[in-house]
Length: 263
Image (cartoon, rainbow, N blue to C red; front, side, top):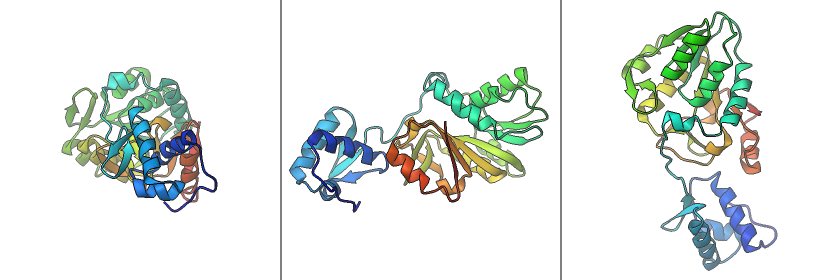
């Protein structure tokens, strides 16, 4: 971090900037913050104490990390209640990239369930799925050919994972994979809390001619247990426009090879 502040900031402004910086960094040290703001270590430590008390970050030895450094995974039922309007908008945009006759993969998740709801009128689709809720919805509300991957059922998540599910994809070639993510950072990429889910997502990407990743902006700056892809591994990214300007600007630096769509 080599950019220096041109003018001194008030404490409240400096603390807001610290929180913004953490959205694009996995961790920051006290010396880095001192250099960035051109203030003393004592001043930075006072800022850190205040922000930690407000649960806006977490103190570690010599620095700070995001408060939700390692995110836990809520149940599928709970996920459905989070940012539901944004998920519907993201899904509607994603549906524009599905045409009659396509073969597609729908990753497990509530955003992909919303996408499935947008596909009822599409004809001659073949859809590879590991999410039981999505499979059931499409069976009842579409004419799509459904390939449900076998494997271990993830408790509380209503989806299958494991070597059988991953192996099933090795000989498939699909037009588009629609992938979801639990977390995203510019250094760690796209992440999930579950190792087997990460392996399946990697297999989805490998089996598809085009990969579209969908997530709402609340996932930015959060860290989950294991990474499954970087920005260079995907073709399109669909998210909401509530993302802060710092993250938007960093994403814009990838527009030469990545199509970024805000809803």
